Length: 156
Image: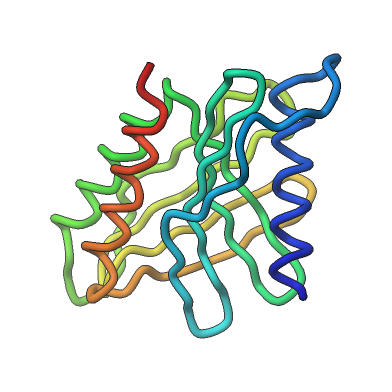
């Protein structure tokens, strides 16, 4: 029930962000391309299309609370680049790789990425707070494949 509500809230967020003055009409559904459970969190990679505008979403939840990072076509290469750096810098301790901020002027969410025992993502949303998720080493191939699906979806 919580995940269904969260998916509905994510779809509503897309409707507001993509089309401020048009009626809320989705051309396609919110599609989950990857789910990555953690100890206390769950991360989902999703795609969404509305009014011929496409976006990807990294949605991180901890119980009923969640934050989302919207990936547009301009950000998809940056997301893949920072992921590649984190994946190739695995070590026995955490080290920062970089931070990406959404291309929204207000209330932009950011993701801080660290490499170490997998890849640690910290989503910081100005309204929802910060959420941390570790993509385990055994999930890294599937996570990268999900990011690649988003990048392919966003291509014109």
